[in-house]
Image (tube, rainbow, N blue to C red):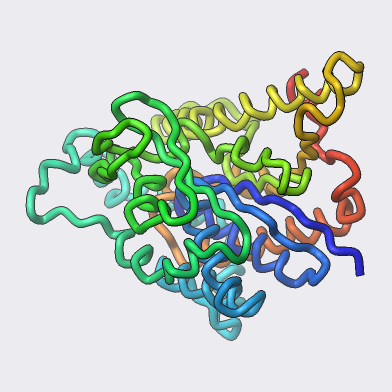
Length: 343
């Protein structure tokens, strides 16, 4: 059996990270596909940490169980006898109902007017119990796939990548820290020699690809994209405009890195750059832009069981389609047409 080693790049996107859950669940069905390294931001960081902890503890079955535990805590239903009918509804209809509901509108307005620091002793990060339940001895283990977590230094606006023993509950919470919802996470930073405050890694790397360019890692980078790169419809409502602003800002760092990869590929192809001096990067992408275009910022921040189930199903289906079309391309060629992407 030929084992195809890949790196995974897992985007953040709140509850839409359930799509990545489905992708990982499907990849675990492939005994000849090995995940060598993972870089993740926000929900991608949480998925990556659960995947690694489970893989170290119990192999593929352990990784699947660890991901299921995380998403059960987030509100998903993992009992197949129940989840089947949960996913039968129209996700676009549910998204619109939630987006225009009075409670969501009130909560969104409140988040723009009131700082998360205004709550004093009543403040608590609702993600903390979910992250604390991870087995960090296995998350930080030297066995299993390498793991990189991205967050943004508030003071400098620069990225910080956490790896190995640096990955803690606070590092993952920092990676998922939207500043209008959560208080910044403060962590000692050996690079700056001071205690730094961190916000969501999506502002500077969603996710960062450069940690995957080590020579001991495979060439293939499979990006699991949960923020649509394109939306044909013009955003016209306040909710739609804010949602698209969020998507553009959280895709910008990824697009910059992909453009740099394409530049290096051109130099290698025309002989300007000697082969072997730079890593060859084969880029792949698993996404479902049609589904993500039907959802909104509301379904990112409110984890409805129906939406989570539909996202997991979509993730499995998207990964299945990718494997059917491109599994034999792994290790051979990129399957993302970056010439078309960047025009």
